[in-house]
Amino acid sequence: MSGEAAARAGTNIALVKYWGKRDAALNLPATGSLSLTLAGLGTETRVRFSRGLPGDRVFIDGLAADVGFADRVCRFLDLVRARAGLSLPAEVHTSSSVPIAAGLASSASGFAALALAATRAAGLELAPTELSALARRGSGSAARSIFGGFAEMAPGVRPDGADAHARQIMGPDDWDVRLVVAITAIGPKAVGSTEAMNHTARTSPYYAPWIAATERDLMEARVALLGRDLTVLGPIAERSALRMHACALAADPPVLYWTGVTIEAVRAVLALRRERNIAAYFTIDAGPHVKVLCAAADAPVVEAALRAVPGVRDTMVAAPGPGVEPLH
Ligand code: PMV
Image (cartoon, rainbow, N blue to C red):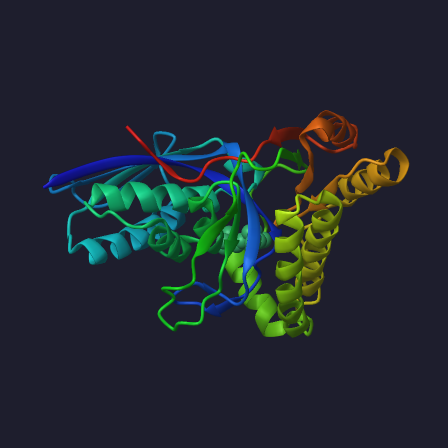
């Protein structure tokens, strides 16, 4: 038997953040989260299961992947093999338009694309919610990249995690917003998200209040989103990001992702609102970069303001994008 399939997925940025797990082994989130899947920034992955291969092989942009990354991919392939009753080795080729070296999250689009490509190559046909729960095993945020536009991840209540998956709240064409990304540093992030969130949960006195606050953020964000109200959704996204980082900063030892340029980029966003009345709102993930949500019409002004911040190395503007899709 030899099965081959390819898929493409866009990365996503959380507006209500996920930071903490209720089960590490099954990668079950402690809370829900809400995100925007992006067009043009994502991952393409091809998977081929074949008896003829000596073992699993993983390539990024045509070059053999480092051991850590390859191990993560192989563990994920094991889940797919177990589900399909398959014991064949696989070859995986992946390439990302998200600049991995810049430390922008690529695991979200990476594991979403891998989930679709690997299951199809293994002869499985999963419903989107099943695919989302599977992608979650690779990376929590990947569960959301199965869906286009705005997606909400449910933490679920079942011990087996079958109900811990995302669903779409609003399609990519339903609201003309943009996410402007300011790259503030080059190089991979200092501490991986899994390690950092487990450390935060263990040692931050703010972890319990953070978890408690997220429920309200999600409820309010859902309403603001459906009302397409940027001036309500934006402040919720900012406070979710700031509280996530406050919680991580209060860990022992602290988890600090920001640089001076991060703060200056945040200040530039605040100035856009204060001085030019532009509805632009920032969010920050497990890294130093700043991502700014705004109306499509305001994106050029927001991008220019971020470009003018000393130390910002690059900027990108992304529109809402589709969910994971097969490639032929
Ligand atoms: O899914 P992970 O392990 O890459 O963690 C994602 C963590 C954040 O990006 C900081 C927040 C989020 O909800 O995407």
